[in-house]
Each structure stands twice: as structure tokens, then as C-alpha cells.
Image: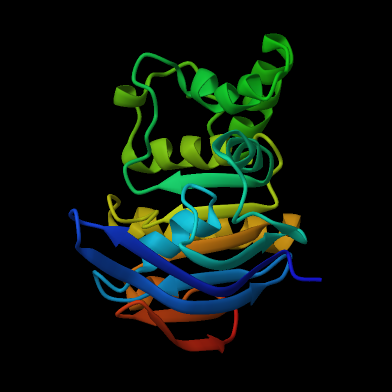
Length: 231
């Protein structure tokens, strides 16, 4: 059974009283537990829209989307929020850390939202930060951390609820090449050692080439889906 499966997904946005724009056209794909893949394409190809649908941040106009054999497409906003918090971890280009919270507090937040006790959440956050080499930085605020450190905090936050999937949107876009390489090596390690399914969304073919499978979009159509060697 696939971890997630999209069947003939299309997305149309209303841009005016009688005008519409179609962003995705009949996208079908299947992703298994433990894959490390990228979704790539030029700006305007539809990859961000597809990521939002796969991440339950948006719903398709037509088609079906199954996550662990449950059809996500007809779910309401509360159900989608539960799915996001339980099954999916997000890592973004701009980190999206809360400036008034320490690294440890930022990481603990999704665990608290899931209904856990503060002491337990903070303990788990500390464990994750230590695993990512940030045990000496957990009481620092985002503006006291380097870009690479902030991205590692964001990855720890994405991991805290033991997600089945990590969706990373241009995760190295704000980092220098050396730090970006370390972040990609970290994703590879998480995938190989902990079997987390990792989906990288990027316009960068060099970044995409570091994953085991590349899905390519062009003008809203899926035009290529190929597997390759690991890093």
C-alpha cells in the first residue's frame, strides 16, 4: 500500500467573477513509505500548489488524494489540521521560527498543540535538538542563530510529532552552498536511518539530483518521474 497516492488531481483557482486559472492537470502519483524524492520544475510549473495539496494545506478541485488509504480530498479544515499535525512535518525556505521563542520552545510548540504536557514537550524538543548538534543552542532565540542552525531547529520542529512525511519547500534556498549541503546530508540521514519519507520541493536541478527520485512538473502537467541512485 502506498503511503500517499494522488489520482487525477487538478486544481483551478478563481481569479475574478468569471475568470479562472488552472494550475494542475490530472496529476497522478504514488509515494511509498521511506522514499526520498524531489518535486521539481520551473517557476509557475505548479509544484508549490501540488505541495500544498500533498501537505493538506489545500484541497484539489477534482481528483482524489489518499494518505495512508484515507481519502483526504473531501475532509474539512479541522480534519485537515489534524492530519497535518499528526502525519506531516513542514520545513520551509524562510524557517518560520517564532522570534520571541527560544529554539527549544519553537521545537516544542507542535507537540504542545497536539495536547501533550509542557514538560514532556520540552524534554522531547531538547532530545531532538541534541541529536541535531544544537544542545548548546537550545536556549538561544532565532536572531542569535545562524541560517544553518535555524534550519536545523526547523527540522527538529518538523520531527517532533514523529511524522510519516516531511515536506521541505526550498529548504536550502536561504543558505550558502556548504550549509545547504549539510542540510541535504541531514535529510538523507533521517531518511536512511529513520525511514522518514522526505519530499523536497525545489526549482534547483542540482538539489533535486541529490534525491533518489525526481518528479518533474511543466505547466501543471507531470512530465517525468524517474528513480536514480542515492546520495
